[in-house]
Length: 311
Ligand SMILES: [Zn+2]
Ligand SMILES: [Zn+2]
Image (cartoon, rainbow, N blue to C red; front, top):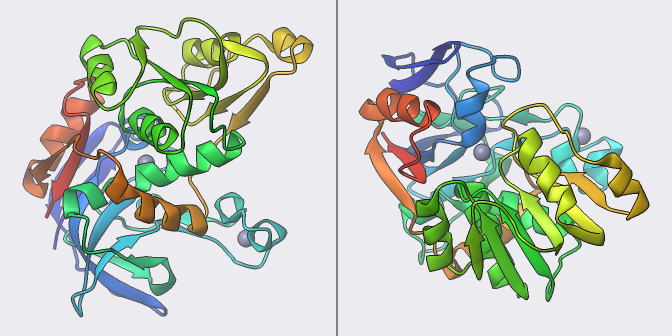
């Protein structure tokens, strides 16, 4: 089958690879769309979490061999440890991700655990369904922030995760949502789908700030711009540095929370929420063009906001 393979640091190539085989408890999913994630664009430059050769792609939807339309929760966990039992499967010490620890969606077919499949409603097309995974990240971050309905929300970064945070906050009744992005074009787009204020950086104070970038600058700003007692939720993974003012965090009781993925209930909620959101911001490319588009995004091209690959 055809696949986009991460072959060496900073390099992806379209290759013919042996077809996947479904082991015990797994089924074959024929991929319809697979989204390229920012974590992959950063991840392949410093291998470690992802090790080549690897077929990446953790944001994918497709059909089972018997024709069911499904979204796949790419994260599996042991189901037995104290974290899994308490519903925090995303923190399981033996968690594994399709597209990171096992072959993922940048291919014609994927072997996925049967338990990870979620049947899609009829009222969502493939392009929008492919954004369920980023929306699930935002649903989880919203919960970690204490479900701040009626509060002032800041979002740093208007890429897919930032836009998903914006849309979930809008859907769940945030009072005001301000979005920051260095690209004026992306800021304008955020405004067009519901941001009240946009700019290169956040101005004023917020109850909750979602950092969907993850550099020392954005992390520091996510803490500085909080009201006393506010919460910063970090989803972005651009660099390992933090650089925030810990003294202010102590004196003004600011909270900083890391946010990783979602549990299965949040993934299910994202499927239910998706048809109510504006998820028109992806562009679909044939898998054959995967290496070109992946490389262009990795080198800093800001359009499209979200690239989807179609085998
Ligand atoms: Zn992702
Ligand atoms: Zn576990």
